[in-house]
Image 1: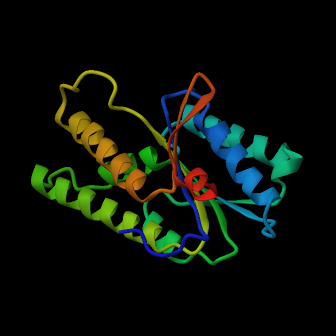
Image 2: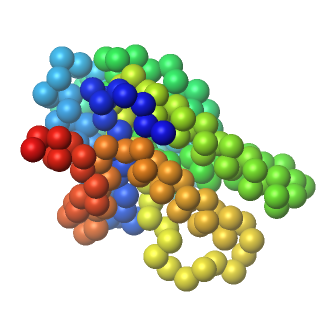
Length: 202
């Protein structure tokens, strides 16, 4: 259930790979930063570098943010697993961009004991999602979250792949339910699926 903290906004930005979702999310949090008294943005990176190519991607994104004059007051925090705990520690002056939820879920799966039963894996993922949703529903800061839409293809054949796709979909649904705004980005074009902020203006 969403708490009565309407001064703070949860915005979920969905999209496929290279859809422009991260750029749009950065634009949204930047606009929020410009229109508020808050000068700093907390950029929460959930990605882990499992190989050289991924490390190169992370380094490039970090360098791009450092070179952007509009992002000089952005501070990066790496949080591959304990996202709910981080959200709970936010203060009212915080502006937060989480990129991305899907990698966070992926990290949760790979952190599991490979010998764990399928039911135990499901239970862990559901508990992790529930904890994150609860933290977001009671957050004391504006949060923009980026996530992949991975459910538009065929059902995967492998068990781990199905687990990932299933829970990625359920994670997105759970966040969308409590979010004030949900935007789908495709080919760089944003489409609002939900925007209670606009309704509030009327």
